[in-house]
Length: 164
Ligand code: MG
Image 1 (cartoon, rainbow, N blue to C red):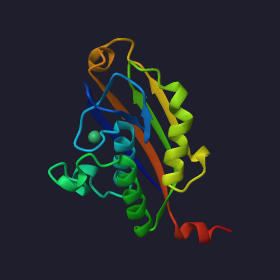
Image 2: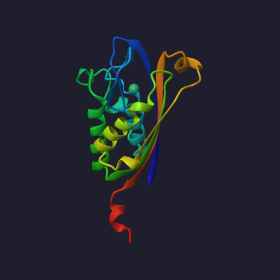
Image 3: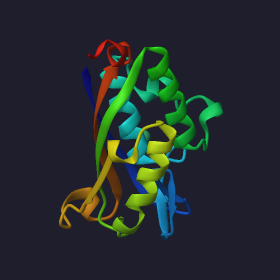
């Protein structure tokens, strides 16, 4: 078994869609980035790559490459899942925390878990998404941006067959 962690930050700006955990959330602002800037999935992908010691999403999907301009992070997560499969690993569980002052995230968490567990081909109980504000403190509290953290556990797939 191997553990991995990921962290990401994106700036909130007007004129962008807000996509979190693969779900479009109605809001007056969205996250700025080369892709759809889904901060939650970015942290998750970095955690999975980190668990395999396979660098980070900037290495695999460089923001200088026009191929990734405006790309859905769900598509990138699918590629990371393929990398995981090719490397002989399977996801045990993922735990994520989204840090955002506004809007309220709770109504969308179930849909995000649905999207992510589907893409990673795991039970929804293997995916946990939590959301917190920072009590008005810092750049998140001022609603200038959002941050996300993710921790994952992956397991060598062969071990599934060696269990008694
Ligand atoms: Mg990012």
